[in-house]
Amino acid sequence: MSNGTSFDFNAFINESKETLLNPKSYFSSMKTAGGMVEPLIKAVIYGVIAGIFYLIWGLFHLGAAGSLLGGAVGFVGLIWAIIGSIIGLFIGAVIIMVISAIGKGSTDFEACMRVSASLMVIMPVSALLSFLGGISLTLGLIVNLIIWLYSLWLLYHGLTGSLKATPGTIKIIMWVLAAILVLFTITGMATKSAAEKLLRDYNREAKEIMKDLE
Image (tube, rainbow, N blue to C red; front, top):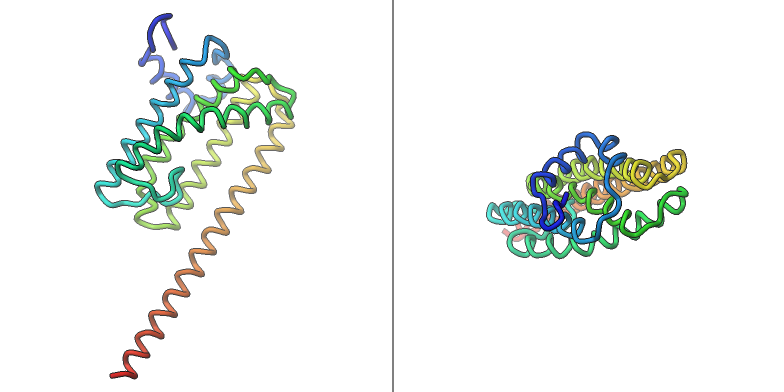
């Protein structure tokens, strides 16, 4: 990505496209060494782009339900997206390193950090679609689930392609994580439904009380 002295933004754009559209090929040939500055810059750029989307949706008063930042929108969403990208980069690298170790893959921190930075391409995608949660919480939860499941697909290729982890073991881990995500989403939708029913019952009883008072 770097020409030796500067960050290559054109390469960044091409790598982002390849990560999203052709992850198997990208991660199989991804450079796993060269310093930690590049992946850090990459993560921050993703955070800035995501933050800009949160800022835009905040101006339109559209919530970010189900996104990485919950209900944070506007300027606060922009700041937290940038901070979150930096924190998430290193936490993600540690998690990837642990999973890779289970799959007998590379545990080199820089390599895991580079995979983590590449996976953060999902941040702008999540932020772009986060306005859907402001239109419908259910729609937001479903879209968020799809995004996270696709993230697991990218992670699978990052672990098996770049870190050379055992595909069979990683598949099992990805299926377990996918099941957990689906369970959380179903639970969230059930909770939403119960809350809406409670609110409807409360409004109905309130109207009946007001009617009796009249």
